[in-house]
Image (cartoon, rainbow, N blue to C red; front, side, top):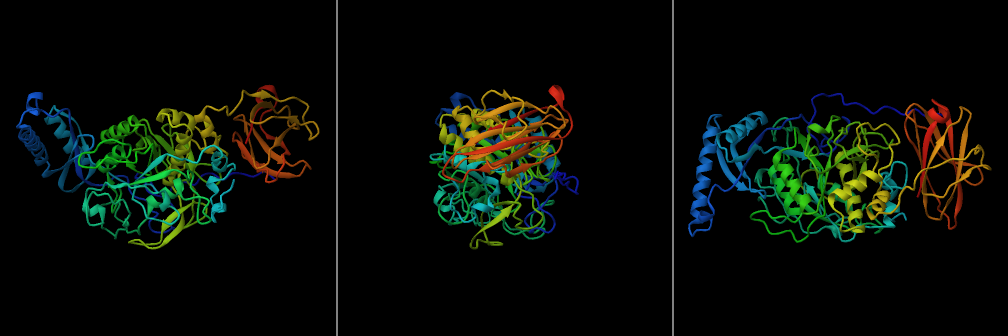
Length: 607
């Protein structure tokens, strides 16, 4: 029977732009929240073109005095600009980019702080840029792990990312992934893969743990009471343990007989805490990217565990700011792949920072239908999509299952919870990037991005503005290694209208075929080795609807896909036996064009 895909649900609210950890229906738990687009801030960033001193002054015995004098003069100018807005500023610190963080006397609207920054830059030609220090929020062979069957997102299937096949090629050994987030909990299913990190939060009120920056990246909780944080992020919610969930998706301990499996089980996590109560500042997030990738941040020890992949499941609204872009550029120059959640506002990602910055992997989310998750941002800046789920209530299994903590405020016991969001999609890509870099350590960030895009699979349902396609772990690892994924397309041979006359195909192969008439049926046969999963992807022309079926050697149907007009159909079947088996793939007409011009379709067969 022909199945009809349901359209992706639309958000009923308007004006939503701040990307959060995860979006859910009103029945979901309180921390699955939506906020308004603009958050007030009490900090701004000023970057000067140079020190303002001559080489002779900088090298003289009185250099420290000269630097202090210049800094005082600059702060005096800054204060003069701020006074016109009735504000007072205090120099807080120097960032890893050499810019100055100015603390204001109180929180003000983003528009007002932007006006202050513009005045500072206008009054001093030596200012390279000045901008608000915006606040970001969390965007929310089969292993023997007991919950593996619940991890639909990792399976060898039409909607999974084909992790088991990828494990034959790479498990992420030797690659460190920085999770720039809320910190981590030492979950029993994760702790063995955690390396020392850093708490980058410089504001004690945000940090919650009683101090500012230190080497303890553990998560004390990010709960908040009603009205405790500035509007619009002023609702009450429990601690999210967001960073722990993200880290578990990337590198939970695997094949240990408990819990969940991580995508890159032999990779290591470097937790860098930047999000606390009420979110986190751009300046802290920028320093985190620099430090995690092996760069230098004044006042901090060097990172002994340089990360090749940075995961940022966080964001906010507005254009890419100069501070974030400069930090991303530095991280990329240090060899790191920067993976960022696209945001959960069902809007164009061009207004979601830092996913709209240059040189990043911007990740959209799809759900269990294979189509765009109702909340996911989209647009031309999206790189590709990965599983993010779509829930209708708290802990709905249509989300992504990972490691968590049961505490509502401070830490409680270990547990496992389903979350949804582009926050959950991004670590799928980060984990696959770790697999890729373990397979080819010399790969550059741009090479990793190109391989992710070239290996992405066609969407099995509607996902407009979701980039190159669906994340494919196996294809991505093969692509970065330079292995041939898809030989040149070959044509079908008629007549192949029955099992007996099926075209024999040696996979992997992509076929260019034609639906000759409304009664045409095309059969293809493949020899599927033991332990392998055949993936058949049939992509019709845009005006046609053809359907895809797979049969065993006895002619019994064992798989089917019946998507709508112009949508690809995908079927995956696994040979669980110990010997090679024959499998038949059938393509049939449902509606649309036929013939040599209007009846074209492609069929990709691989394992």
